[in-house]
Structures are given as structure tokens and as C-alpha cells.
Length: 258
Ligand code: DAK
Image (cartoon, rainbow, N blue to C red; front, side, top):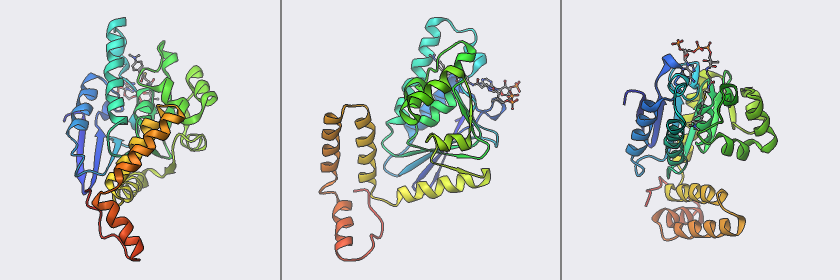
């Protein structure tokens, strides 16, 4: 893939948006490559995925402004749908995703990070939704996911004022879980991904399904969703082994994903 690379390190997949000359801005080609990579991930052999950007300056500096500048209304709507569909695919990928935000995460870049399950960032990271300064609205989920992560007031402030926030504030408002020096970001992302990968994969995936489907529903339905995915864990080899190991006071040697 030209604009998106994929590496597999054991059970961990690493997706890198690779268009550093344009600070990894998302045009149609980048989005197509991202979709192809997401579709090709072997979810039986991969237990966590890290998404990052090439270079030391930018995660993703947004959707490609040059490409968008002359779009018609129809083309703009189609571009928004194309991006939204891919970000929804990412959000509902059965395995956990970690955005390792290594610099600018603006517009579509912040929206890409927010489509991941967990965000960690480097000290030089900058987050924002600058769209209203360009005469458009956030179009890849920013008006929806930012509010869910940082609350209505902060999301509206950031979106209406097009004000960026730095890593420390992103941590303070809950947009990221942790901040690291740049050189420690990928090691920290891999450590977290491997910790996730060491747990029972079917249970981890069912947690993701329960959380993702639950927050899209009201509480009574969300409780039913939780019951369903809880029940689905039983009779798996990993559930039997995980509980047997506890009762026999020994460690699980490695979950089998069965
Ligand atoms: N698009 C295209 N090129 C970009 C880019 C972007 N978003 N961001 C940076 N680049 C390019 C620059 O044009 C420059 O290219 P050359 O001039 O070297 O050819 C190169 O990357 C390096 O950038 P700078 O020279 O500007 O680097 P600086 O360090 O000085 O500044 C910066 C870094 C991130 C502060 C600055 O580049 C910047 O402000 N970039 C734009 C950030 C931005 O506004 N991003 C949000 C884009 S809007 C929708 C669908 C999607 C969206 C909305 C609606 N629907 C259809 C409803 C999403 C919108 C967005 O994401």
C-alpha cells in the first residue's frame, strides 16, 4: 500500500498513515489504502492494532484541503460518506485499536484518532477541529465523537472556536489516556497492545462489541447487549481455562482464541 503501511509484530498490527510530505493529510487515495489495509487484517491472528502517522511531526493533519477546495456539494457529501464509512469500519473493527498520536491530529486526523478505542500521544501532539475556519463542518464524525469523549461544552468550544489543544490539555479533558516523550510513544503503544493481546481474545472482542454497541443505544438495550456478549464467552476454551487456572492457583500459559 502506497499511503498506508501495515506491519505485524506477533499478535499486534501496526498501521501507519504514510504521506509525510503533506503531514499525512487524508485524500481519497489515502482513505482507499486505509480501507484496504483494514479489510486485510487477519482478526484471528491479530489481537490489537496500533494506528500512527509516518514521521515525527504529524499523526494526520486533516482531510486534504487542496483536494476539498474545489469540491461541489455532491462531491463533498460523497467524500464525507466515504470517510465516515471507513471510520465506522475502524470503530467497529472486532479487535481493539490504539491511536498513537505522534504530532498534529487536526480535523480528520483527530476524527481518525477518535475512531480508535484508545488514544495515547506524544508531548508534541496537537488536537483540534479547525473546520469552521475553512468554511465547513467536521465531516468524519467530529461533531459526534468529540462530544462523547470530552463532554458537550468542551467539544462545542473546540469546534465553534477552531481552537487547538496541546497534549497536556488533551490529557486533562480525557481525549487521550497518556502522554509520552515522542521516542517513548511507540514502545508504550506496543506495551499496551501486547498487554491487551495477552488476555482472552474472545472476551476482549466481546467487551469491545458490548461497549461500542452499548454506547450507541439507550441503557435498557445496552444492558441486553452486555448480557448477550457476556453469555457468548461461556463454553469457550479460554473461559474454561481462565477460570480453571484461577481455581487451581496457576497462571494461564497463553489464551488460545478458542
Ligand atoms: N491538507 C493538505 N495539505 C496539508 C494539510 C492538509 N490538511 N496539512 C498540511 N499540509 C501540507 C502543507 O500544505 C505543506 O505542503 P507543501 O506546501 O510543503 O507542499 C506540508 O503539508 C507541510 O505543512 P506546513 O508547511 O503548513 O507545516 P507547518 O509545520 O508550518 O504547519 C500545520 C503545520 C498542521 C499547523 C499546518 O500544515 C496546517 O494548519 N494544516 C492544516 C490543518 C487543518 O486545517 N486540518 C483540518 C483540515 S479540514 C467532510 C469531510 C471531511 C472533513 C470535513 C467535512 N465532509 C465532506 C462533510 C474534514 C476536514 C478536515 O480535516
